[in-house]
Image (cartoon, rainbow, N blue to C red; front, side):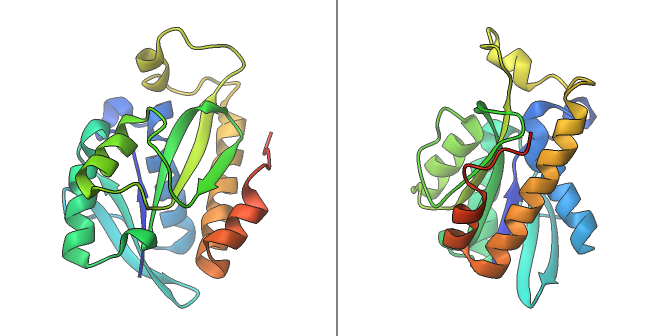
Length: 190
């Protein structure tokens, strides 16, 4: 059983913001795998299904980003999923939009959702797929930037990088973490 968790903020106000790229990716995986993510459990929305023989659970915490770890702690405990079988998908302001980076483990890198997960699980030993939301210029107000929607020039890149993330998730499920990292890290969609 693999848990694929997308991070974001609940509610209409945050629906298409940069910080919600984890949710946007889970929604695309849900659509492509035909796994509805509608059941309310473990402080979030989940859907269960199978991809090429592998049982998977898709999950979107309904806590706000800074409390994502509470929902993740509950789902891994209640569903009895090992940390190594959890793939967390989140935004990364330090990566340019169009980039993704898959890692086995690591620090939060200043990401509040990852910090909450690390704090609640007591470990940083879980895979994560970071999706770049950064631009060419340095951001002066990070909170405002991540809570704003993608602009019209970014939307084609957004669609492409979400598809790239979907391909990475499929490679992770089919071939394992190491092969997916080798194939996708260092690639630039745009």
